[in-house]
Length: 210
Image (cartoon, rainbow, N blue to C red):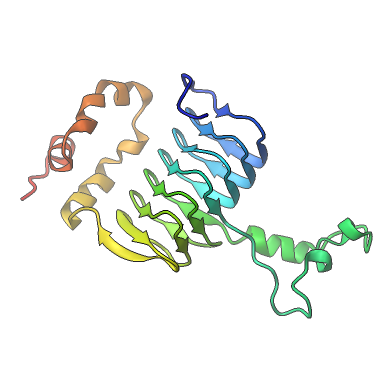
């Protein structure tokens, strides 16, 4: 189970995980039963478990609940069949090589997830989608379009529920970029993260929020 043992700068990877072509940042935690391929995973980000992630670039401090699926690959719909025997040819002994055109097409549809994003249980993020910093995706949502920073979306397909903060606060948070602070700075300023957001941005951006 995640959250039960002390994390380290070196990534923590739980049982039954397969991570192919994956780069993990510092202080990251990968929950049990994760299957990843072609993934960049930023510092302090974590998954709760039972996640499948493909072709994704994920920022720092990203919170991924259990069952989240990122980048489910498309099947080519312009062919006579949807089945993967037409491009995973080696599986069936049809050829000694696979159809790299289709596989490269899939890999190019990268999901980009910003910093400090929260993805709720069983959310699905479709290929090529970009989710901005500080956004929230509700449980069970299917995200088919880009999500603006600090926006809350939910539903199938996902739609905007509300914006978390005022434009002024969002601009300040994007300017402060606390998600790039060093471990030592985070530790020193830890109690400031318990402030309300107006006081936080005033302290670190000098912004007077009405």
